[in-house]
Length: 295
Image 1 (spheres, rainbow, N blue to C red):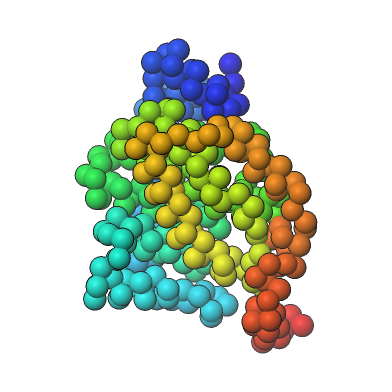
Image 2: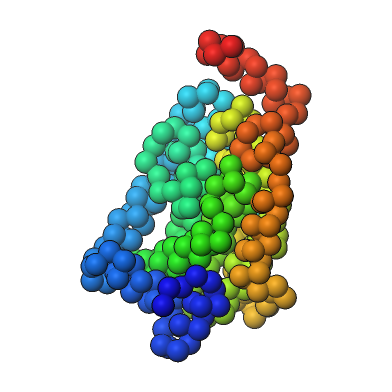
């Protein structure tokens, strides 16, 4: 029976006494016609690619093709080297890793879209930082990515994971939900706690619009990866503390889709609303396209 909702997933986990990652790897193996070990090797490849993107992003100050963004992560690292993050080492790593990956994407480097390229920094930053700080094994990290993947699959059964369809809540919001679910899993949480973490993320990020300045995946996209990673960390902390969401995960996702359906096209990746229409953004976009010979 296909898993179309968190309710379906939690029932399956309870009936078979399995964790989410176990169900996820079995579902993927069935879909691909492979054994579970092959699925886990494929997920390991994604994990290693994520770590490479973080590593490359951390050491680069190369600007994007636009010449605008690309060195914010370096500034953050410099600050942390002088004086650590106000909110601790895990927060320090999550923010730098999220920016490092997002900036590597805008340099056209190799990243893992999870769920999209514009939200590629969220899941890697949370899983890798948690692994380093909590001494989580590679096996557990793979489990976390499988949980993240199942979370993303369930969300995508209800709404397209695209800013052009439902706003940034469907991209960075979904990425944060996937990351929160993964964090809860690798830190020993239950399938029910994963669901609560996912719901908490969407409750906090509901209505986030997609308003890229000049239509580029740079502003505000890069910093939103950092903000969404922090939201994932918060949701995981709350869920692992036994705090529950009054609104179940499935209903929170449905609410996200409903809000996305109601967003005007100006707030769906068209650069015709939100931050993209501020005076500063419009002036920069005009200069950028003029210099590039596009206008």
